[in-house]
Image (cartoon, rainbow, N blue to C red; front, side):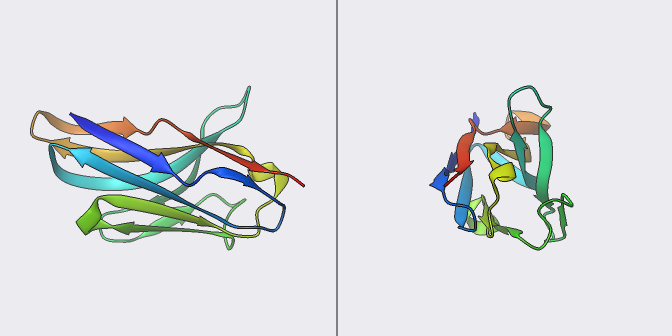
Length: 120
């Protein structure tokens, strides 16, 4: 079984920073793309940032220049450094990974979500 476990959410003032982490564990053979999505009530989940196995990245326009995604392949972990946070960044953030395991072909996995609240 494969699990994604997130950490690092919380309450921060506008202009502040937070770092999210997500570690994949279980019977993993390989991990392709990893990424972070976010969702607010009544809205669809949206891509925040993604990173390929080779390190190439892509970002939503609203976070470009403020957020940085990185991964540590040895630890099966993806990070999201969020700087200059704005109230509009308030959302539940979900980790996503495309993983091939001993018991399945390439499959989409999701973390449980972590709340990020930007407020004074």
